[in-house]
Length: 481
Image (cartoon, rainbow, N blue to C red; front, side, top):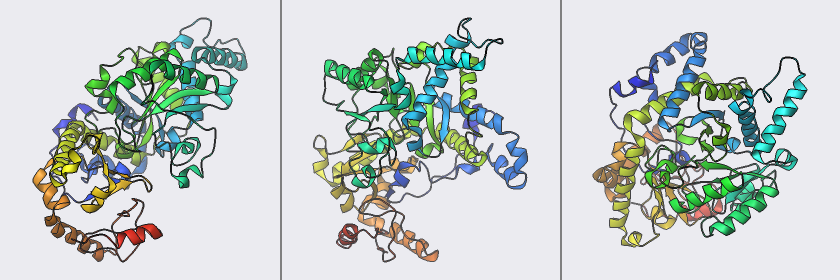
């Protein structure tokens, strides 16, 4: 298959809009079936009757996915795949990944002193290469045995593991395990202070700085100036730079949000080393860039060297992605190119913000609407007033609108008719009738955003709730259409 043919598919019609702006915590980019891709569909059909025949094409498919990902995301390669983004940001995983990248770099394999020798014991090779990697990274045994991250103070962190310590939700922080991340206020600090904090963190075992471009806490956007500042301080302290784009990839006007022009212009000599991706991309994982704060010094310039280190890392697991997931992930990437999701996200964000400004003039005030592109954060009470299902953190005053990246989501008339306006009642009742036929309920709790559970849901508004006492009371106070 050739990814160059991706634009030749016959376009599919957009599915109808609905008021689900939760989109499975932003993991659904489209309601269209990407299975219908003209090059992927025959593989699905063959897989149904002859699984082995498709499995024998696995490496070809994985290579095509890797190439297309690199093309779509401007030089970042999907080196490490995981079931969930939280698995990707474990400090020990990142530590092993950068050690592997250093150990298999041209600095080692092209060096007559460092590269493996046929007449030496494997342990001697391992010790020599490990010592080089630790020196290159500025690491001690602390960084190896108990690595941790520096994180922004408004980051979500993770649902479990070490980064769950940073969560403001007690249900998450209560199950945190592993070394605590070092929390730093990156939004309101000067270069000298930030540099000092990074240096202190590095001495305590920090190996990387992690932040997201749009805060999942309040939708605040990381400014280009702060982006440049953080990159410079990472470089001075030999800290990896990791950007969590799980929520923002494709949704913020560029493949990765930090690739928007206003960010790309700042500190061009330094780029993120790793990017966390997931949700709507079809598979979660870690993308690596070889022009990063630390990776640039490893002198990966030849495609064959890049391929080799990716291959070595992937060889450490039995299979990076199962074949069906690989087929879906490949078809999603092809759809993103064909439909230009990053460009579409800008139009969608503009249309929804315009409607909110019209419906509630208070949203025109500075800071009333946060976010970037099709990641929109508003006062949760406004979202509740217009009966829109949103991605809401239970104790946050903010609600996130995460619309599908379809052209219909940028249609102002359609948005009023099927989502925000009183006339959306007809569409909602059609959804209710469909749900009744198959004994289903609306997916998300209208109040807190987690899975809805209750059968006495609103058939007029097509909304439901979970069995939490607070949500139950709040739901039964909602103003029906």
